[in-house]
Image (cartoon, rainbow, N blue to C red; front, top):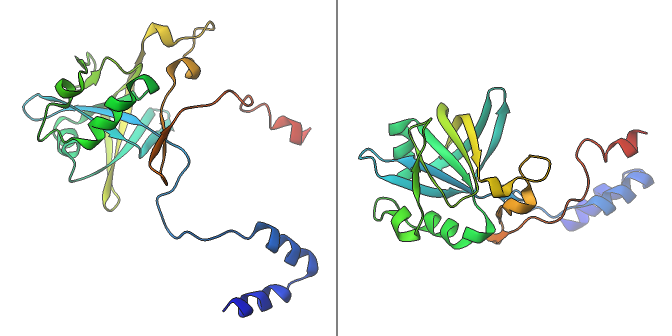
Length: 213
């Protein structure tokens, strides 16, 4: 098989053979790999009004108008049932200072424990949507459920962002949220590790102008 592959490559023009050798990549199969993914704290109430919190790596912004965020959950999770029942959720941004708490709420199940109480987190009732959030995480998105998409093992919940709230300590001198003050966690989908963000490398929609000019 290897000889056949080499033979087919050798039949290509010289310049194409050179490029093929240079860019040949190793296949790892069809896997859920993406670098990086966020660590999102999804807050919901269950049918009895108990606040629940779950960490989710499969999620992100999905629309600008209306502003929306999406999270994907398995039906087996307690949060799945809570979200279907209450049709609202919050999304907190996990941060380095609360890394253990962020990990814990992704390990434990709200069926068995009060995760807010065990993790020492403060449940705050949103004034805008029927969902709680943890006061200890610096930024929170308050969302009403807009769409539910059955994909396969996971179901995607799309929430319309009603408001974004943040602690005043995490704003920069320009009045905008500062990622280096928030210190959000990011997740490595291969080695299942948490990482932090690094320094600013370049300004988006500016650095690419060097090429066109």
